[in-house]
Structures are given as structure tokens and as C-alpha cells.
Length: 219
Ligand code: GRF
Image 1 (cartoon, rainbow, N blue to C red):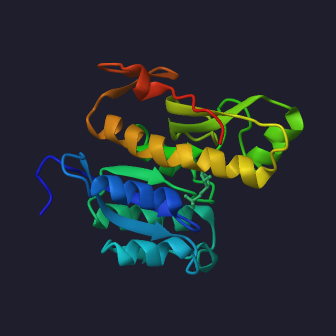
Image 2: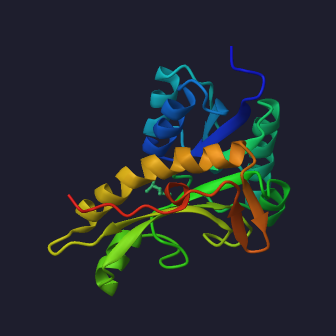
Image 3: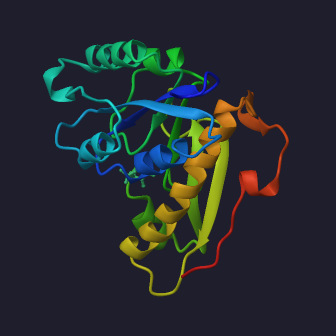
């Protein structure tokens, strides 16, 4: 049985779910302040569904193709989250734009992981675009979700070097390893109430450098 103080977390996915697995594994550790109570996918074929089931987590499929519009899809999503008594929502490779109504309802209680150092490279194909731009540092960001995509207050970032000869695949793998570290770390801060939104920024109580930034050598 989870401790009474654990925050009920719902994870939304669309694909393989490796970030979801990092959250499930973190939540299984003693003392971690979250309980992953549901995994919801908008795609029935998402590989992450089986990984969640294997971990004993309840899964729900809400196929966006069976909904006439975004509003009705988001209403179904919201109903599933409420049914599971979710307190915090984690987007983990969830590839649907959400309505303003939905994001406003969950404002301050919904976070996302983005594979770039925001505010650079919002949107898709971040690793290709980082290579094209010739940046020397790339990385990932966990942020609160607001109606505008990939814009909300930043909770935590990790940086990696861009190396000579990198391909999108190599860079993606280097960034993904860091995603799996900072997403559970950022969720912990949120569940513990230590990540406070102040305007456009997040203030982290009891700040430690390792809580906010990480630069790792390339491999
Ligand atoms: C990750 O790179 C995440 O940052 C992005 O989509 C990808 C999802 O990968 N939003 P996974 O499904 O968590 O393995």
C-alpha cells in the first residue's frame, strides 16, 4: 500500500514510454513521493502500454481517432484522470496538442519533458534542428504545461555536449539518458511542493545545484 502522503500521478503517453518507465521505477523506490496510478495512451498500439501493464500499473486507451474534436478527446482524458483521482499529470512523449480549457484546468499540476534546452527548439525534430544550428550544448527540459506548446515555467534542465560526428540518433540517445534522470527528479520536486511557480519562473525551495542543472561529459 502506498504511504498516505504519496501524490497520485497519471502519465500520458503516445509511444514507447521510456520516460514513463523512469517515473514508474522512481516511484517504486522507498521514500519517493509519487504513486503512478494510471497510464493513459491516445494510441492503442503504444509500446509503453505493455511496459506499464508489466509493472502492474492500470492503463487506459483513449483513442483520439474515435473523438470528433480536441474538446471531446480532452473531456474524456479529464474524466479518466478524475476517475483515477490523479493529482499531478506527467506528459511523457504524449503527442497531442491539448486544449486551453484542459491546460488551464491542470495548470500548476501538469508537467512535460521536452528533448531540448527550452526556449530553444520548441516543437518536433529537436535533435536534427540542434545539429543543423551547430549548437555545442543541447539537452532536455522539464516544465509546467501552459496553453502554448513547450513554453511553460521551467523546473529542471540537463545539458549534454554536441560532439563532432553526432547523428540525430546519437544525440537523441545522449539526451534521453538525461531525460530519464531529470524527469523523476523534477516530479519529486513538484510532489514535495518544492517547485513553486512565480510568474514565468519556477523557484525551487532548498535549492541545490544538482536539483536544477547538470552537465555531463559526452560518451
Ligand atoms: C522523449 O524524447 C520526450 O522528451 C519527448 O518524446 C520522447 C518520448 O520518448 N517528449 P519515450 O516515449 O518517453 O521513450
